[in-house]
Each structure stands twice: as C-alpha cells, then as structure tokens.
Length: 155
Image 1 (cartoon, rainbow, N blue to C red):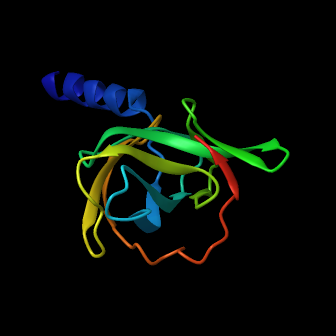
Image 2 (cartoon, rainbow, N blue to C red):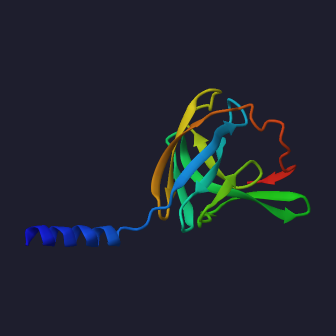
Image 3 (cartoon, helix red, strand yellow):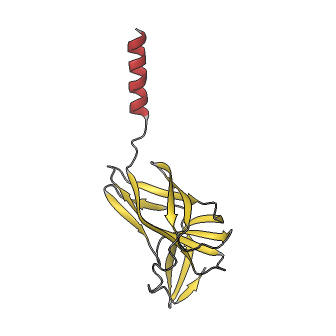
C-alpha cells in the first residue's frame, strides 16, 4: 500500500512539473566602450532545443547597479534609440535568438569598475520556463570593435 501510494505521488509530481526547455548559451562576450565607461553590454546566442518556446525575461549581474534587457529601435530620421525590453526576448522551440551589437542585448548600467580584456562577467539569465541559468561571459573589448553601429544614438 505504501509503495503504491508513493509511486502514485511521484507520478503526480512528475506530471505536474513543467516541461523545461533545453536552453543553451553560445558565442557570448561582454564589452564596454573603454576603461572609464559607466555602461557595458553582453551579447550571445540563446538556443532552445525544447519542443516549446521560452522567453528570456530578466538578467542580473553584480558588475553593475542595474542590469536590463535592451534593444535598439529606429525612430526614423537616422535616430536610433536604445530602450529596455521588459517583456524580454522569445526563443522559439528548436530555434535561436541572437543578442548582438545594434540589436537586442543585456545592458549593464552603473558599472562598479572597468570591464577589462580577459576578465569574465557572471550573469544570471531568467527564463519563463527554464528558470535561472548562470553563465560566465568573457570580456572581449576587441570583438565587434569594427562593426558599424548606429550613428545617431539616444539612450
């Protein structure tokens, strides 16, 4: 009887648990504009091998007073505005979502110190389904340095 009750209880728990998406983080790097910069950003590709979409809804890091999900939006007339994305970024089932310069990214505001080449930044990413995933992101101040960025920028 106890064995049957225990088995039934474990089965119920297994069925009640949400199906976790298989989230991976790849090609990650963080950078700032220079040693005196008060802001920085992290870029990476989120992969979802699961059968259901998931959504990155928040990020947290001890390297800055504020860590937010941001994007760039073309306001017209050559003006590009950076803005928070409180609803986060959807990652489709069996798909990817890239966080890249000039687009979606994790923004660090009020850096506690400089992001230096070769350091790592610990970032906890919060997903709706997969929950918290903590990643170590290398600082690469040279990567993307030659990439074109919007010319008129408003934050």
